[in-house]
Image: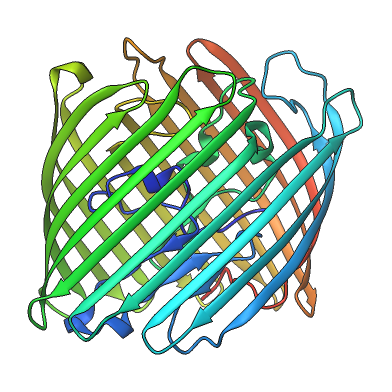
Length: 422
């Protein structure tokens, strides 16, 4: 039901230095790097089955992850268009993964397939999602990371599948894709890649280079959303809990939009306590004339905390140059937040809300959307859990308005997968 992805596929297209959502099923960093100790950095990946965050620590043994989800429920708008007929639905989602760790390399490979059928007269929907994440340490100074994410299938099925989110400190949060849908979009192909290299100059100083590329295309449409970003940054640890950084970056749009965007800024991360994290960054972003007039200030901020041993919250907001599911808009604004509560020993209740928007350009239309999700997960035994929940969405794309509601029930079996509370 509810996913706790470490990053969203859409979020991965944002600037890696500016965004606190550093994306999709793999998160390279969730904490301040204390005094050059690369191994002390909390690092997570998301379980594609929605079971939680998977630790990428060195101590995690290599193992296989195998599971499946069987679901059913009711959907008010199965194809994301106005005036649709509501329908009961049934779905199945097999899931496999391999986590392999050595002294210097940690890797995670995941794949999930989702197939959904409806009782009303709708065609069967399906979607493939895969992710690869690799972290490596050459020595005490050099570290690197590679990741790739891909998906292919009907865009409408994302609303029924595991929602895409990111790691906000140690707390899983829903990302902007949860509020990003297009009316009657059809089949979508999305591929993203990211590479990074980091060199620690001293015990408290480091430099890093990040290169990313994202491609998204609606089959049957002439539009393609493509963006490549190069980011160079310098970071300094002021204390074991506080770090600052400065960055410069270039983003190249080379799909439907063809232009360049240049920017830079400063940022700060603060590990307020063992379970509370805060991050903020921002700076000017200037576009070439072919991009249009949307110059401005890019920013990103996030906060998460454990209220108690059994409850936690997160809040995040940003304005970033991005290429997303919704089209090649220059700037995307998003805000989301959520609360998770452990109930007794085996139950977890959660509530999430998100909003995303982008302004009109000559080449593309404006869009905005609001998403709400409430879910309850109950663990039975041996990796088996039951999940139930309600989802709602209201959005507008280029003047086309549509809404959607769904009630979902699932039986999930994934022993050895992720965790909501770390």
